[in-house]
Each structure stands twice: as structure tokens, then as C-alpha cells.
Image (cartoon, rainbow, N blue to C red; front, side, top):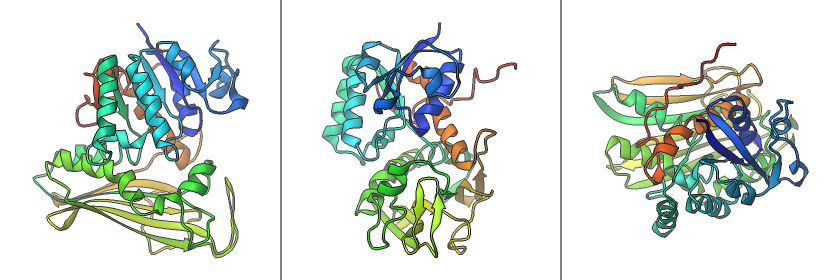
Length: 358
């Protein structure tokens, strides 16, 4: 029997998740929620760009999705700039007996040590009340910062450091809120984006660092952060507009999980809007962008992850990967014990059911 699913959020990640929810015979789509007035009343097939008619039309917000009583809610609404609201939405679904998978709120990827204990307790209480579970993931933070490092680390005899990296050109990333508000591309150099307010980097990637620490069996004593910004040498046109000369056009930031006074777990991002900016910073393994896992130990590894797609570029492919990780986890999350679930306690998702004869 197909798993009854609803989705809230039809932006970059949500739209791609919606494609799979419609096409994948493991699921029956019963509701779509959106935050965009112009999308209300549109058929899910149109929202997904598939052209067909599903008979499921979009409604505003989360209420209709909860009222549809699905087995699982796919939650892909914006969480970066509205973490409190996103957490409330997830709790409402959990309390109603609906399992949740999604991309937000990011703190629930591994909240212990990253979110206040009271907030964690409220989410757990909602899950216990509804006998439901929640799994939040993505790419980075997400499978590039937990699943892949854990898979490789399991072959080592000694681990001195794990470093995960995203190295990407964001010129084609069509997300104004993320580009302008969160990351601050196009901002004056002395007015960085929300990401670089004190403690935000540590909070955003602290989930990944603490999950890796838990998997390694070590305790993070402190999390440190550092960033550099690079101005545009001239006006640069990108998907969200124009990055004016002298404003932020490239950035490098690093978050360190300190163990025994040493950076044992490191997350680094190098993000540009043009490939020739700061050539001295790390370069991707393929044109446009890639992810990298570096393990120093015995043996040591460098693993490059190069997402591609026949429907778009590296940025599109990365979002497809995020959506696929979310949707493919649904069966295991529905079967899981109630509460906050993470990569550490869910079964390995192997791609079962994804091969179909054309």
C-alpha cells in the first residue's frame, strides 16, 4: 500500500521533492501547502513542472496538509530565516500523529548541544504525543556532512581529523532570500549577511559537527568559526540580479569542532559567483561545484562528490540530491520509533524502489 504523503513548501527543494512524490509509486500525494499566494489553487503537477493533472491543488500554509491526515509530511518551507515558525509547524504535525521529513528547521538534524534543551523537549513531547518521528536533512549540512563521512570513516583504523567541504559557484542559484539575506552576496563588505552574525555559523553547522562527534565517540569542547569575504572586481550578473562592483562576491568560512584543543571536525565552505575569484581558495573537483570529504588518519582519504543532472547544472543537481535524500527516507521514518531521528539511528537508505524500467 502506498504511503500517504503531504508536502509543505514548493520552492527550490520542495518543487523537486514534489516531482518524486508524484512519480514514485511508493507514495500517494494527498495535499500540497505553499506560502505563495500566486500558487494557491494550482495543481501539484503544474507546480512540479510535470504538466499532468494530479487532482491535488495547493492551499495556503500547513493547515490543510495536517487536516489531510497523511502518514508523512514533507516539510521544505524556508527555515533559515524563520526557525521558530518552522519548528512550530513540525511540532503541530508531530502532535497530530504525522511523521515529518524535510529540510527545515536545520537545528533538528542533530539538536543535542545545538538547540536549547527546553526546545528539544517540546519537540520530543509532540512526537511522543502523536507516536510520530521527524528526520531533517539536506546536502550540507546533510548527507555530505554525515552519511558520506561516516561511510568512509568506517574503513579507518585511526582518525585524526574529518573535514567536509562545499566548493561551489552560486551564480546560478535562484534563491534571493538565501543569496541576499542569509549569505549576503551583493552586500557592502562591512555589512555581511545573516550567516556571519556572531554564533550563526556555529549554530547552523553545529548540528553536523556534533553528529560527527557522536558517531566518532568524541566530545566537542568548543566550536570556533572564521570567515573571509571578497569584493566583486566589477559588476557581475547572477540569477538573482547584479552583484555590484565592490560588494560581496565570494566567501570562505570555516567551523571547527575542537577536541583536546585541536580541530578534529572541520566544515569549510568556499562560495563564489564567478570561478576566477580568489583562485588561492579551494577549487571544485568539477566545473561549477563539488563536495569533498577529507579524512586524515590511517588510511587517509580525499573523496570528491560531484553531483550532475540532465535537467540543470551543479546547483540544480545538489538540490535534487537534497530532495532525494528527504523523500527516500520516508518509509524508514514512518517505521521508526517516535522522536527526533538522525542519520545515526535510521537504517541505511539504499535506493530501494528507485530503479524502474523505462
